[in-house]
Amino acid sequence: MNQDPLSVSPENHPSNQNIISKLLSEIYNQYRLDLSKDPVAQERIEEAVQKARLELETTAEVEINLPYISANAAGPIHLVRLLTRADFLMADQGNDLSGEIHDPSSVDQESPPQRIRIELPERKPLVTMALMVITVLIYFGQLLTDLTIGYDLPAALGMKSNELIISGQYWRLVTPMFLHGSIIHLGFNMYALHILGRRVERFFGSIRFLGLYLVAGIAGNVFSFIFTSAPSLGSSTAIFGLLGAEGIFIYQHRKLFGEQFQTALKQIIQVAAINILIGLSPGIDNWGHIGGLIGGAAFTWFGGPLFSVINLPPVLKLKDQSSLDRALLTFAVLIIGLIGLVILIIQSRM
Image (cartoon, rainbow, N blue to C red; front, side, top):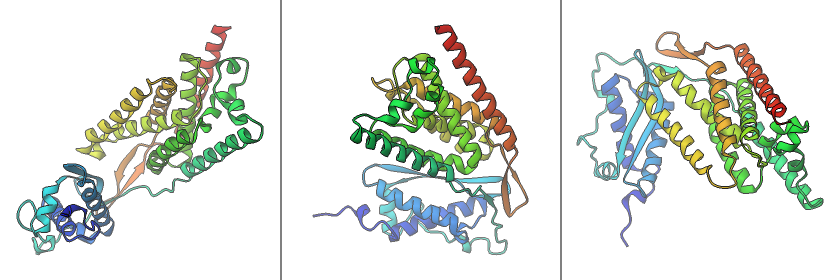
């Protein structure tokens, strides 16, 4: 039986090293930046090449996309490279696309390059993890009450119900984001929160991120209350808000993202559009998704972080020019606005 050469031990494979050397050489030749002496950047490239090799077993080509791989005096450097199976097969034979491997240390020895890096915020996703733990524990409570007393008590007390909200149970505009209808429902939402939450919280910080999550979840439930009478529950309202926040964040920092701005924003729009189309299926509260998306985008536009590059080479830093007070004010204004909207709707229906 013939074995696919790309399926053999992708980690530390010689062809991987050849591809990595080629990428390092391209960056050096273009920016005079030697990333072979930057362990963090080199590790990111190695992981991306290993992942690309595995993905090429089932697809014809893979794009490596590593924003903020490093920086030079002109600004951030984003590594984008399309790899094909042919690249690895040629590298297996000791060649790359240009027919030779360049050693960046062998070029221009008389003028060694200056390494310039942008230091990104290093924040642990404490709120993201706490929200996941709280949501999972609440779902266990849902299962426990269903088994012991015969019905889902947390859902009965907390899911969105228009009639009960009109009767005065306003907490039902908040609690649905912590409730779920099934283990699959919970799993999909917690996976999305794990991926999106860590990315967004890194730049937003814990307090601002919590405000974003709550505003988006409440906005989604308010939209659901206004536009549909069906009961609903689930954290997807808040998670769509994280998607909207990421889109606004990328747009506001388009100069920092450089050439990757359009690609990154297009990916966000595509993900949102596909999920909203899926939400047209019966049983899915699409108005909640749209409301969460708008709520997260609005919070980020008025109260999200606004980074600028400060300091001098070789170490550039990102500084948030938007204060936490502005984020808290935005949170208060949006919450008051949503509450006022609900009151107006209730009065119009009475």
